[in-house]
Length: 342
Image (cartoon, rainbow, N blue to C red):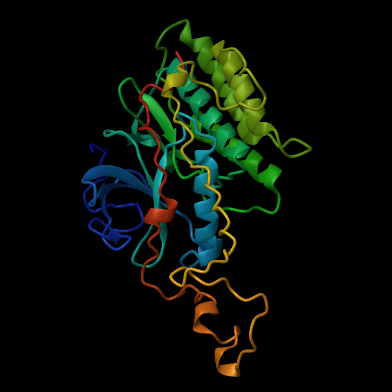
C-alpha cells in the first residue's frame, strides 16, 4: 500500500513495524497517521490497515471488558453499514495486549492531513460522506470519541473517504452529549482542511458558506444535548443541493448508488431443535429411556462435583494474546471507491 511517509526517524503511530498481532496473523508496517499503520494479513497475504484503540481511562492496556465492548460494537456497526465507514475485518491484540481494529481499505489511502489543499466542492463532498458515516455509527449506538484527521483516510479512484475506528467500545455516561462531541470533532477536522485559494470564482462563496457552517458546529454547544450530528448532515446536504434521505431511520444514505453500499452480513442465529423424547422399545440395542426419578447420588458423583457438570473455567487474564479472529471477524463487501456524492 502506498502511503505518505513520515520524515526519517519519525514514527508517530503506536506499535512498531514488524510487530505481530494475534499470534502472527497480522504484521504491522509503516505508519499512515499517528493512529493507523499499514498492516499485512499474513494468513491471507493481503494488505489491510490497523487502528490502535485507546486504553481504558488512558493508562495501561484495555481490560477484558473493553474487549467485549469492542466486539459488540463491531457487530452493531455491521448492522448499519455506510460507504464512509471503513469495514472492520477483525479485532487483534498486540504484544502488550493492546487492541487494534483491522480495517479493509483500498490500497493507496492516505491520512486526511496528507492530502493537502482541496477545492471547496471536494471538501463538501467529503464532509457529506463523513457526516453520513457518523450518523450511521450513532444509529448503531457507537460513540467514536476520537475523531480527527488521524482516523480519516482518503484514497481510491475515483476518490473516496473513510472514517476508521468507530467501534471503539466506549460507553459514555451521557451518550447524547458524547455524540454531539463526535459531531463537533468532525466539523473541526473538516474545517482544518486547507482550501485551494481562489480556485474558481464560483467556488469562493461555497468555501465561505462551508467554512462558516463547520466553524459554527465545531463551537456549538446547544442546550439539550443530542441531534447535533443529524443537524450537521442535514445542513451539509442542503449546502450541496442534495435531497434529504428517504427516511429518518436511514440517515446514512448519502450515496445515490445503492449497489455500492456494503450489505448486512451478520448471520441470524439458527435455533437448536430440542432433543427428541425418550422412546420405549423392546429392542435391547436401542438406548433405554432415562428413569423418571433420578437415583440417589453419592457425594463423589453429585451434580455439584461431577466433572461433566462443572462450569467452564474463567478466561485467563494473563494470556499473552487475545485472538478473536473467529468470533469477531465479519465478512463485508469490499469498500467501494468514489463514495462521495456527485
